[in-house]
Length: 378
Image 1 (cartoon, helix red, strand yellow):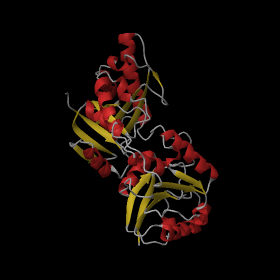
Image 2 (cartoon, rainbow, N blue to C red):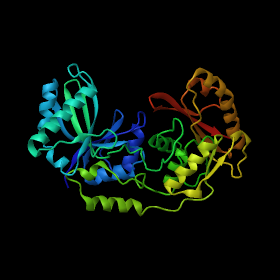
Image 3 (tube, rainbow, N blue to C red):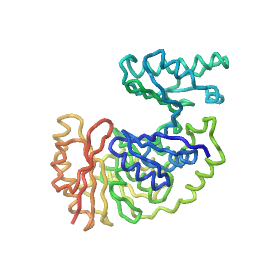
Image 4 (spheres, rainbow, N blue to C red):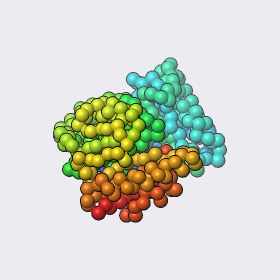
């Protein structure tokens, strides 16, 4: 089987977690990079496995060419050397995600335009047709990276980013990304035997990601579109073999182990809609209530939550008492011993919780420098 290298992207600060996860998936030749992980000695089995079974990866990029890039002319020339005809045998649209730091190429959008022109000119010359650009839902997604005088062009085997699991039918304001929620649950050491409570469940991301883990359901289970399906070397038989292997691992979700609360009636409704879409229906208990008025029948030994962060100064001021009450709730309603993990995007609000954090994990969410506060409850 042909071997090649991959770059698997992820959220910043969780590269080490992705390395651990990929090794657990049987992928050994991995090393951390910036906002991703390098995989050497990969093959198509590796591509299918990461896309379908990784909870932390965001994109699986297959490099097509690495080249010297001095200016617009050399970029156009290098892209033109690649035979693009096989990639667009069944594809009609493309999109190019560009990340460029170069003295001659003015910006990433310009470099993407040059790359698109090179591809379309070749295809028009050789086939008489050219693909159109579709940023929202392309058949072929490419990734262009240029730093100083080196460039690379990669085929995005994921297509849509992998955080799009397929269960988020509805949402609330500023939901946590699915891959980051999975990373937080991994940091928290979540396992199916724990009783987990999210007192600010929002659109239900922590609950659904925990349910997927507990039931051993691959995060790609609900997806039906992948970038690799239109790659000329795609092996449908191998892909179905990998998919069926992970689908066979599914097990039942333990009842009375996952609980979600939200003071916002619409958020509780959205969580239930998304849980149903994920296939969990009534397996997870979701209640529209203020956690300050809630007494659990089963005290949770793990609390994981992403409370409101407050974008404006007045919001932060109003949230201070909310965070103090959240700290009190954790102390009073947790099983002893227990643990809690609170994802906080505002440094000022961290002090209001009133508990001594055992550890502060640095994470980035939507470009915001945030902390995952870890507490031991005795």
